[in-house]
Image (cartoon, rainbow, N blue to C red; front, side, top):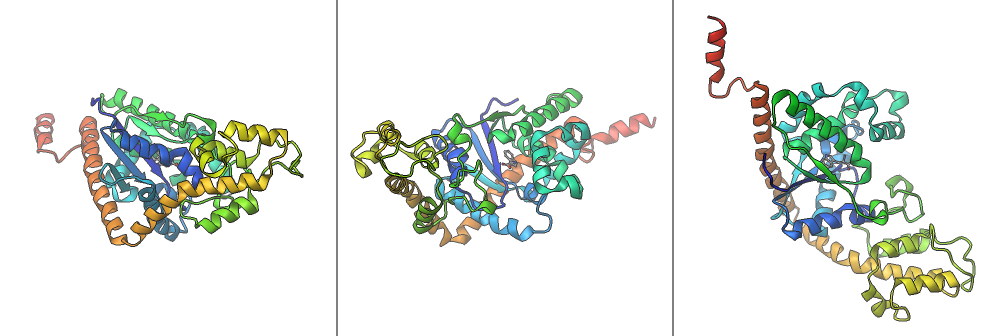
Length: 364
Ligand code: TRP
């Protein structure tokens, strides 16, 4: 099999992307893209997967496809280097999913911790479980294998998906012969990247909690989220009081976004974040000042993203073409894998009339 380094990542188009996505995955995708170390990079907009728990709201998915593509382009995903494509328009993925479903048991799928947790969250445990939702790890295996991806950068919560994919690949290759590439997950290195909390300190940024900062938010909204909602230290009542860093979201965000250069520019009384933290812990540094600094830092990073987004928003026709061209390229790649799979399974009945000989033989 090929030794090429092929990346596949994906997102469900169920909402605009936020700072959590940015530190957890988008930033790294752009770095990987620009490193020149990879032979092929693909990003899949997983609209089929999004439908598995949004069956009654395809409009939401349709709308967020454009939002997510704009988010990609605005952070620096370059369509000349990265293939951006739409899952539902790649029929090979559907066919592969159907074949792979025979390689996994319902018992095995039921044990998948991510599916279990999401089932609870969606209320499927009570309402009944849609088969499509239950089987989405199989469809994700189809995504990964169809692109021959050996490198799959994902969040920690996706590790069970990758384990499932590897099992299916191994089983397929055992039964039908070496055909599919064994994928490997690559997860974020440090805790802040793995999970940026919401501005309110809750573990996850979520639209329904209103605790997100979106990449497309205006400067005014960002300021409002930080000044109005960002959790600090409830015991830090007066500026002179000693402050605590643990669970203090302002400092969690500073850990994620601060660079030493920013001090010279915006807060020259400290050389670096350690000095600032030291003063905060000792007492004498107010939350308002910390928040002001954080807002300036977020703006440093968000302003260029916002400007880039505005450029693309003014040319949606071009974005449409990028998406369609990416999807066409992906169609070729995934169709090629499907052909290989059908050949390994010997179900490629109408290929070169080969089977006529075999049929004639058995009828002799
Ligand atoms: N399940 C992933 C998520 O929710 C999205 C996804 C779909 C994906 N297909 C993929 C990720 C293939 C990596 C590879 O984040």
